[in-house]
Image (cartoon, rainbow, N blue to C red; front, side):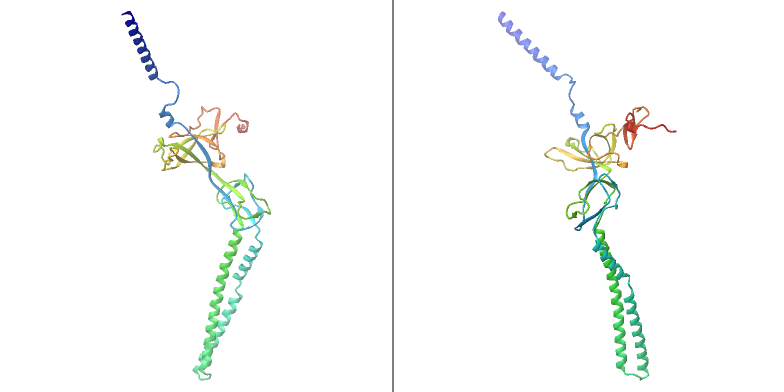
Length: 317
C-alpha cells in the first residue's frame, strides 16, 4: 500500500510540472516581433534616378567637340558634344544657296511673257490675214513650252528647299543634345575618337528621384497610388522625407511572394544623390521641423544637424 501511494504521488507531481510548463509557454512574450508589427513596419528600399540615358550618335563620325563633363548639371536640349560635320555643312550651304536663287525662275518667267506677247501678236496678224495660221500655231506652242518651263522651275525650287531641310537635319544628327534636365554621370569618349555604337555620355535625371521597394504579398491592397510614405535615406544628418506612391504592381511574384511599388521623391536643386539605400514606412508622412528641433534644421528638403560646421548659419549684420 505504501508503494502504491508513492507511485500515485509521483504521477501527481509529474502532472503538476507539465501543467506549469504549459502555463509558462502560453504566458506573455517580452521579445520578438508580432506578425502585425512585421506587416506594418518599415521596409528596405533603393533611391534611383528617375531616368537614365546613354547618349550616342545616330551617325558614324569623329568626335570634334565636348561641352560637358562628368558631374555637370545640364538642361534639356543643351548641346553636349558634336561630330565633325564639314561635308554636311557644305552640302547644306549649297542647298541653301540654290533654294534662295531665283534667277532661273525669273528668266523662265521672262521667256513666258515674251512668248505670250508673240502669241497675241500672231493672233492679231492672223485676224488681219497678214500671216498664215501656221505662224499662230507655232506661237501658241512656244507659249505653252515657256509656261511649262516656269512651272518646272518653281517645282525645282521647292525640291531644293526640301534638300535644305535634309542637309540641315544631317548636320543636326552630328550634334548630341541632352534629352532632359539632369546630371552627367559619365563621359565615355574623348576628343578625336571615332563614334560608332558606343555611347558618349550617360545622363541621369535626379529631380524627381524614383524609389523602388519590394513589399510582402500580405500587404497587397493596403498601398494605393497617390498616398504619401515616409522615406529615411541611409545618409547621416538627413531626416525622413515624403514620397508619393506612383505605381503599384498588379502581379505578385510567385517565387518570392512579393510585389513591387514605385514612389516619386521630389529633389529640388538635386540636393539628394541617387543610389542611396533607404527605409520606407507606408501610411506615415515624414515629421515636419518644429521649434523644439533645436539640434537640426531643414536644408533643401532635408534636415541637417546644425552642429556641422558646413551648415552653420552665419549671424546676419
